[in-house]
Each structure stands twice: as structure tokens, then as C-alpha cells.
Length: 360
Image (cartoon, rainbow, N blue to C red; front, side, top):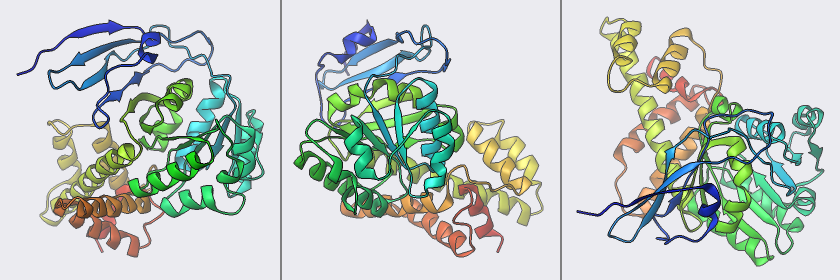
């Protein structure tokens, strides 16, 4: 049994210290409306729930912003990586009035954002040097390390007080390494991987999982409100990577199971559309299930989240399970199906293209 005490707070109060459990504390900022005109401060209603264990969680009591506006930070923002997720994030940062400097390995991808008002950085080091807070969102651990420690990398532009926010989905060991090298130069580090898809990124409705330097998290408040509907603070660096890998492990395994069901329906003479209609009337009904299945039935595998990236996340989650001596048999089975799909040249298609692994 535990006692429960609910307190309604305004957002300003949330910047004051609360009792922390470094492993389970989380801090949410929620926003479900995204008007682009007014720049008055957002006010949010939040609720503290305390258990007798001493852990504290701050949960959204009302996820709708009262006036739906964002006051952009006056800090200079840098953004490295303009892929499926990064492009939508940068677009929303600009729409909400942030001053953003961009860099991408393929420079041509910067052109559209320059037209929208972004500034151009010639190298990751230059962006980090010019900006107060630099975000990055790249494909995998190697890309994340290279961006920081490679030639003209972020590390060369880090000075005391500069903030670096790693938004890529990588393993916790990579996060620990990046945190150490950034802070060794006097920088401040936050990890903030995002749960969502290209469409959710475009809509500014991502879910942000953050961990590391709490003050950087607070400094990123207006940025996170521009790019996401909710953000969680999960304590020490590495926790967000762990949580994100678990989430993507579940999503990848679920997508493989849905694809297996669709193909089994076909193999046994059942209508795939009827299977979907029934599924969407039951407890597993969701926008995700409906959209992915409809895309499969239409043969539309335009990437909303790359298949190669979900396979990478499954691999990293399995490795994390090995290190914790925890079994991950469902993820291991799903990983083999995605590896089969990659062998069938589906890497750059959407995760729903795992369907094709069952029909070849």
C-alpha cells in the first residue's frame, strides 16, 4: 500500500528542486496544441504523485496547454543531422522562433532550412563553437561518436558552459563515453532520444526521453515544447538510452508480429483486410496498427522510420539484455526477421517492410 498526495503546480515551480530518485524520477512537459503565432509563455497544469518509497514522479494532469504558445529561448541553437527525424525537429524549432544553425553531412539538405531562416555551419565544430546548445540526431553509435570525436568534430568546438544534447538512439555505453568527453572540456551534456516517426516529428508531437545534466534539460524547455508533446527526465546519463532501446524493442517486435499475422491470414485463405478491420475494433486498436497495416496492403513502404534503424535498435536491446543477464527471446526472434528483410534490400524502406520477409 502507498499513500498518494496530489498537488497542482504551475510550470515555474517545476524548475525548483524536487526529491530525486536518480533511477526512477521523471519530469514531464506536455503540449498537445502547436499554434505558431503568439509567443507568450505556456502555462501547464501538472501533478506531483508521491509514494511512501520516497520516489517522486511529476505527471501531466492536463496535457493541453492553457494558451498553447511558446516563448523561444534566447540561447543560440545548433542542430546536426537532417534526416527523417532531424528535419521535422529543425522545422518546428524555426517555426517557434528559435535561432538555429544547421549542419548536415550532405550539405544540400541544409538549403531548405536556410531558406526558412536557419544559419549554416560549415563543420560540427563550428556549430558547437557558435551555439549555446547543440543538438545532434544521427543514425547509429558510430555516427554519433564520429560527429563528436572525428575530424572537425563537436569536441573541437566545446568550451566551458557549452551544451551538447545527443538525440540519437544509441547504446548507453556510447552515451557514457560522449558524456565523459564533453564534460572533460567543461561542456554540459544531456541525452534526449525521441520516440516517434517522421510524421510525428513533422507534427511536433515526439516523445522526448532525457537524462544527464538537469540544468541543460531545463535550458532546453522551449526546444522540447516545439518538437514534442511530452518530455521525461530520467536521471543519470544512459537511462534515456536504456529506456528508448526497450521501447523500440517492443515496437519492432510488435510490428514483426503484426506482419506475421497478416501473412498467416493470407496463407490460410483469410481476408487480410477483414483481419485488419477486426483488429482495429479490439483492444489492440491504434493509429500505428491501422496505418502500418494499410500501408502494407497498399504496398506502400515509404519510410516513416527506417527498417535498418529498428533492426539496429533490436540488436542493441538484445546486447543490453545480455549485459544484464536478462533473456530477450522475443526480440531475438524479431531481429532475425528484420535481418531477413534487410537481406531482401528493405533496409531503406519503412519498418512495415518487415512484411516482405514473410512472403519471400
